[in-house]
Image 1 (cartoon, helix red, strand yellow):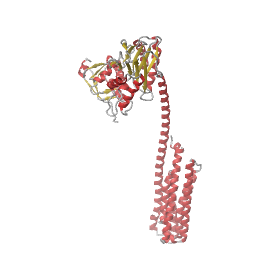
Image 2 (cartoon, rainbow over the protein chains, first blue to last red):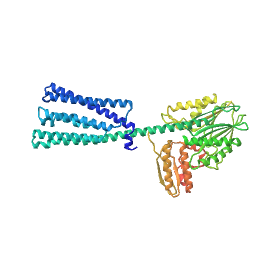
Image 3 (cartoon, one colour):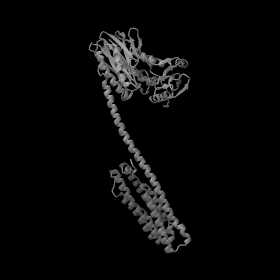
Image 4 (cartoon, chains in turn red, yellow):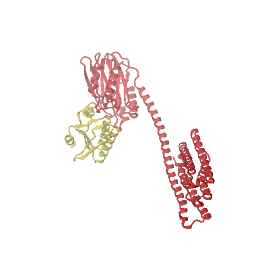
Length: 467
Length: 119
């Protein structure tokens, strides 16, 4: 955004108005202070304050100044409250205001010169002169360098003018003239300095407004992205099965918790025409929206291919070929385990680089671990998979499919992993529970172990219990 | 949290380059991405990239590292080079066994054995 454009934004106008409010308030305060000191000077019997002409005119000017600035202050406050930030003709008003601010001390000096009991010379070095640079300084708060400069130049010119008048009327010695005209010069220099400060201050305010505008913009964009991601998550969650499958002799439950809004793990079950149930669990490398898309594609291929592929290792081979084309070059791969359940209790298990898959035997309380029968999907289009392992599950046995996010969750205190050993312990302790409760027990155990450490990877699991 | 960076050293041993991975925990995405950059650079610089990756100093790695290994394996094979891994700690070796990636990667006991196999 250009400087000009920023300067016309409501945010900048707001700050300008606040600055003006401050300026007017400060100047009103200055007039009050000077008025008080003036009254004290009279009370103390000071020479100039005791002169009635001087006293009443000066008091009049101060009261006028106080009233003037007070009105500007109240007007600025009202406009800030109501939000009427832009005002046409503001520049003209400011110039008039600056002229009035200067006119008061200059008029006081002029009157002092004419009527001062201490003579015309006194006016040229009176305390009232110091009000001029004060007004110039306060002008900085208008954040308009040119107004500051002109204030300084006008003040200097006015003093020079008064000096010329004094020289004419009182015949001041020529050796004093350089000193007297120096006042005027310094007043101009103060004007230049004030202009420089106003310029810098204006830049700072513009920068601050720019930053604020950008931050707001970024906030908007972020909110929009978050919204999209949460939609992606909803869609992904709806791709996971919501109801447990019906197959006699098995109690099955699944759970999925992505590490971010969307994850790269999934589980699925699908009834086959011959009455068997295909249960699949897969882990795409990485997590987040990218892997989530790959996961959706993989799930679609699996669902489409499974009904016509009786052998699970053949299913993996086909899936591998399909996925390879999508993933080649990225280095991404998918580990997947498939359990084909028959209503008579038989389970055919095969894995593409996926593990550990745990089988708990109720009779012996022992746990068998299974790993890959071939490499993960998507690495080598010609990959072959070993024949499936046939498991005979007895009532009470539990087959646990899981992704490594569960096992690799690190503890906050020392960075240790939950690990397969702890998982086996936990499984042994809850294997008699229904499948859903087995999963929630394991989940609770992992979270309690982590003691607050963040979830770094997607955690997904399927528990299959032979009943 | 302390910021880790991927660090490697590489030395030419005549019939190949030995690249030692110095970061003990290769878990963060950013670190792994850095590692991929470094390895790809090293591969590009070599005429025929015969690379030995020394895992002596690595205690933990996530599956994202496997992804990097697969990518560099493809890159090395395209340039007619060979890749060996060595000194892989038992826990990490387990991961290679479960995923069966030990069938794709040639993993040797130590650096000398790996270098010798490149002859």
